Amino acid sequence: MPLYLTQGLHRAVQQHPRRTATICGPRQHSYAQYADRVAKLAGALQALGMARGDRIGMLSLNSDRYLEFYFGTWWGGGAVNPVNIRWSAAEIAYSLDDCETRILLVDEQFKAVGLDLRSRSKVLQTLVYVGDGETPEGMLDYEAIVAAAAPVADAARSGQDLAGVMYTGGTTGFPKGVMLTHDSLCANALSALGEGLTEASGRALLIAPMFHIACAALMLAHAAAGGTFIIAPMFTPLGTLQVIQAQRVTHLMLVPTMIQLATDHPDAAQYDLSSVKVMSYGGSVISEGVLQRAMKRFPGADFVQAYGMTELSPCATYLSFADHKSEAAKTGLLRSAGRASLTTEVRVVDPLGVEVPRGTVGEVAVRGANVMLGYWNKPEQTAAALRDGWMHTGDGGRMDDDGYLYIVDRMKDMIVSGGENVYSAEVENALSQHPAVAACAVIGIPSDEWGESVHAVVVCKPGASATTKQLADHCRQLIAGYKCPRSTEFRDALPMTGAGKILKTELRKPYWEGRTREVN
Image (cartoon, rainbow, N blue to C red; front, side):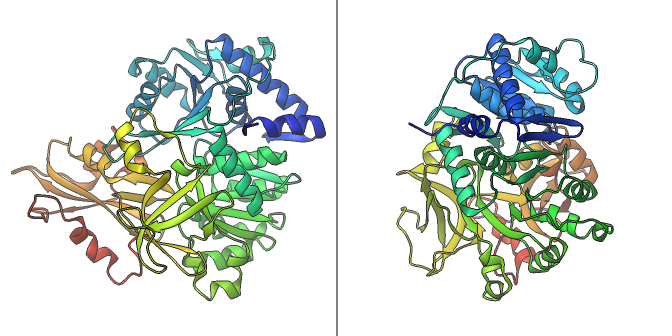
């Protein structure tokens, strides 16, 4: 039988129904209770009109109800659209309309945005309030519809059935909906379990954003294992330290910036963090200095890095526990993205898709059950990325004789800041709409805090002027705050090729000169 994402829940209920499944603030549910709520939510969504394959959205901070949203949607036969909480209302409305998301769950934090989306979106019909406050007028109450619903049988969608549309940045200035299947997400979960990212007896902390595929990777692996979830609304350095100590967390996933902030918090030494067994991270390479400090702060933890992208569900390679040990680190392995996961093949190829010799830089390509179906309603972009069964990542890399992958550049115009992908085209599209901007180019520059920072080079119209703050404030009305320029350089002209294309290599050169790779 093909793989299906609810399988771990069935097994957990059969084998340990009284085990605690979720802890979220004062709320706790056993696996028997959690499964019953999932089956009732599935029935409630079906009663609201969800048919097989329909997309259901959620705009919310982390909670136990977010976990129920994932599994209740799948149980009822739908597909999830977890909404990026950092996006502007315009970006969110685009994603809802793009994949026809008619039902949206919102919490207290985003209830005003939800109401705004009702007028912005062409397809949104139903808002469900998942917060703990008073249900706003025009919304349905989550707990009420779950309590009133009869549990339904698992729809048992599986294999190549659509499980989710996960939105990522786009090279055209518009987000792309990545279509992931039950097979692809299950394959990634199996790889994560094989790598030791979690275990059935573990207490996994979900504190990175649950809309993000990186957090979903740990979530799905832990759900397959049948362990206990500790769920915190959002990452803060102190909050992370507090919940680890209070709940004896054993497994968690953070981006390197989060690890650094928690490790270097002035009160960190006051907390008992010895329960942590595994610290997984991704989004960027961790610096040796931060890693060494983190290893001392989390004395019982093994560290593992994952490299990938949303289109790969998301992991392609892992840098293992052993690769992080001091002796291995001396060989330079910490600069590596690791080796292919259990369910993937990874190659470095030339423009024709032919594998290049070891040590030669080319494009990273990945094949396996974890690869996406394609981009929602974007056949041309799908055809460009998926060629002969291989996902062409747009990352430039080289592979050594032992199969370790090293990322050295990006062949696509993308910036990774704080673990989030930012396509330059999205920022340039927003900047160009400012009345003072005649021309612009956006590049990523090194940042000790964020890995890479969004930097804009702007040519103003004759007689016009603007400040960095004015441009950032303008962009914030159109795109997410993390995509907005953090620094700006004003020039009289941009360097151009003979064909009239902007020479971004010239713009990047002074910032990256002397570095061993063109990404951070």
